[in-house]
Amino acid sequence: KMRGKLQGTRTTPTTADMCNVAWKKRSFADHLLASWMSLFLAALVLVSCSTRTCAADPLKVIYAVNAGGEEHTDRNGIQYDADPLKGIGIASDYGKHLLMIGRVQEQDEVLYRTERYHTTTFGYDLPSDGDGDYALIMKFCEVYFDAPQKKVFDVLLNRKHTVVRQLDIYDQVGRGSAHDEIVYFNINNGRLNYEGEVSDVRNGRLRLDFIKGALDNPKINAFALLKGDVSQLPRLHGTEASERMKPEVGSTNSKLIVDQKQPGHQPERVVRTQRDDVDEDDEDLDDEEFGDELPDQLKESREHSDHSHSQQQSTDSKKSYSGPRQPNPYSMDDSSILLPVFIAIGAFIPLLFCLCKL
Image (cartoon, rainbow, N blue to C red; front, side, top):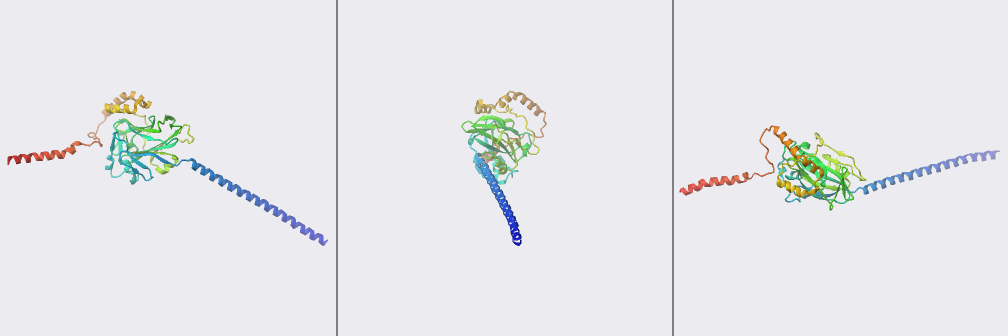
């Protein structure tokens, strides 16, 4: 009996121990499986992130120009070339008389102190770099006028896309302050896509034109064309620019429409292309420069220019001006140069008369 009791006592703990061992083995297997799943998910996340990083091309500068000025490297490392245009429009450094330029770092004020303007439509040829996402940064600064509705013009991309309508720099930021316009577009299979409009990229080059309107002359201070991951641009550039991001047709990287306006900005108005105040020589130059490639919207607006211009004249005739007409800030008065010569001649004649009397 005692032996049976001992055998029963030994059997009971042995069964319990076997259950404990089995439970421990099952728990260890579950723990190991959970660890392997965690490692697999982490590896999957890393591969996904690395794939996205490789897929997004780095942002690179295709072309940048300091209009009317010399070459300059800005604080972001963008190298701006000296203005290549010769004999087209007028290069001006009138902005150098300003003590400072607002809304920009001191290092980059030079980009807003020089400019190129013209009494008619003018523009630049820009190189492209194949298919991909692009961003065009255009820099402006009003250095003379001290009221809105003094200088208003449009910007045309690739002879078809009006990317900036009725730009009034003073109305945007006032006088002596930097204002940037950023335009996003896409090139796919050699065709430029912007806001549902498509145009051909000819010989790998784009065209950027500043359209003459009824109010003063078009101008540009500097511009830069970049390609790649345009999502890096807001962090690179800052938040003080008007971004014009449009959905791309047929692009895998479609973007929402973003149009960040400055405080006090007026809604976009109908594009105006009145050109009756341009000289005949300038008109001929413009026609030869554009030929038959003028956009349809400009051709249509020319039909109504006479009527619109007459309305503008009648409106201006009703205004009361508080002073004389403002002089052209960019023109040089030759009389100021000849004045010392006249004074010297006037002083020399009496002296010569006295010497003859002696």
